[in-house]
Length: 107
Length: 121
Image (tube, rainbow over all chains, first blue to last red; front, top):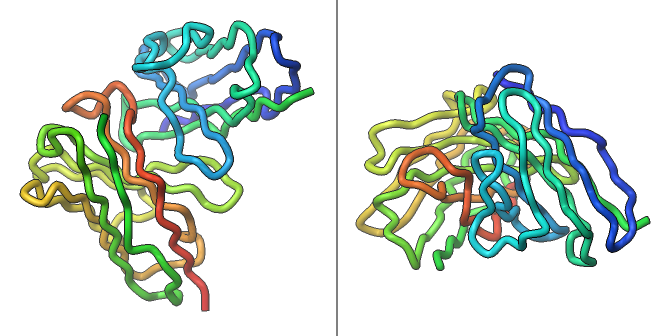
């Protein structure tokens, strides 16, 4: 099973600041990594697929990068609605696995 | 835009059974692989199971293998999850989710609102 480790567990930032979230895989997942945003009481929302492709309707301030074992989700300038939990997920191997999440909170 | 609506959650005793359904609309259900993903209270996301477009291939997390069965009825645009021998650790919100592409790729782009399953005596 591929283990995805997200860091930091919590990121405390102010609106307008840049957020950089990390996801590290225990073995290469090529570029087969997705990112999701989840707000309290809501289902997850797909942000990025295949490492760097924004899903439909996702603002340009969200970007993904990386390949192999190291991936980054960047939010260029935090909006109030961006404070949430973010998860990465790999799809190169079964079982599909998710990272433990990074909570982006208001400082 | 597509929509998924789960139903069937509830309170069940340890060792009991429960069946979940997920009704799909707004997209051609039969052309997409589908999955169940769960989230224990206050915890992260855990993939549970996936089924191919026609139902001929199924995949399970080790934690549910042999106890859960995923199936689909393309004529009814509905996904199912039959759960047996339920344990306390199966307590979670269960989401059905659609892959963005017809294969098992490009992430889950549509999620239901989830249905809560509580396993407790």
